[in-house]
Image (cartoon, rainbow, N blue to C red):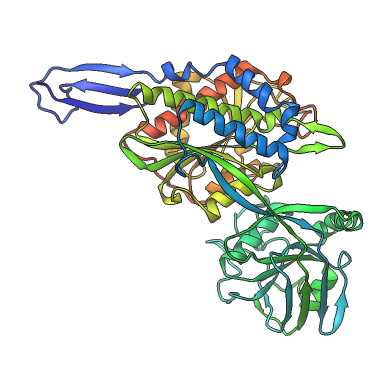
Length: 526
């Protein structure tokens, strides 16, 4: 009886009997090769099936799928039933396809705050951005951490201990003598420079160093946020959703320049971290309401390397109902959600035919993306079902059903790729090769630029994997006139494009799952 050697390549499974000149098998055997082409399974991804499902998923029946609300609960049940019908199990065991995501819906919270006996007022001098429990403290060892930046090239935390303390930081970031940002060496802004991304990056840095609270002085953001907080407080409505950690979350306040100077008189010109002499009294009453949302998870176990995981992700939520109008979110992100179901079906059909993936595939539908990437952050930061060290890559699909009207040149059969080359050269090269062989989508890297003013790399769920050095690709068609409007409906989807883009993701996942060697991470992210 002849021995059978199993070999995997880009095109799929090759069963080789005997040897070739490059084989380690004995040279006396003849060579016969039978190839299983993944195109057979990719062909099951069709525009008709995508259209049928999306008209259901993005219908008024699902009420815009707002996180924690009725429509979102209907959406997760729909997704669960799709996976059950396909016979794709959950990694959680039994019938449990839901990874619970604990959230808090916060009412606008006022704080009582004084510095050296002088009171400072809510909304005029400070805003409570996050607090998980009530606080009543007197602080006489507040630590000033300059810009609050922590990178390999520059860190405000290098020579200070902030564990268990309140940290004061300011907006912006340090520059060198030539006017370049020290974290990047260029004049272009980074994730630390300004806006919401800088705020969250500085919060994360303080959290990682064990701070129990942070005050961020940012006059520009304060001027934008304060009127909104005042309206919310006057109306008594609930504010934003935040993610509850398994541990006590860090309290976070945004403050203006007046309060910043009271805490550190030289804050504008002084960037040197130090312990401050000022004494601050702070009282906050938590007025949040606990709610639960769900990520939906399904799983095909790898046949040879089941401990290595390929994640395919898309967010299941949207904007809900506003002023009586349903925000259907057909493109954002009904398109990615339905694409994932079709990809899962293709992998399941391959498994039934005896060609299941070598590595495991996790289908991860995340909640709360529109509220701040909450579901994916819960998965990566609080409760990774599979260790991130075992996670080979995340292929994230967020809006792949339309055409960007701002894109004036190039083929309509395109997709924007973001992040493919930022952590792994292997991943980028595989993506290019697979596309050239199977789908021939025009791969557009316009928004992959480090200097992209839209900062899309930081704005969808892949980023929570990337910040943990898991290679990612973000598939995206760009925004359009219906973005975040009730007019984002399924009749406007370009279903032929959705089909081909979905097949591209499938083929890329197939190669990642079946190649002999795991892709390498040869770059790092800040």
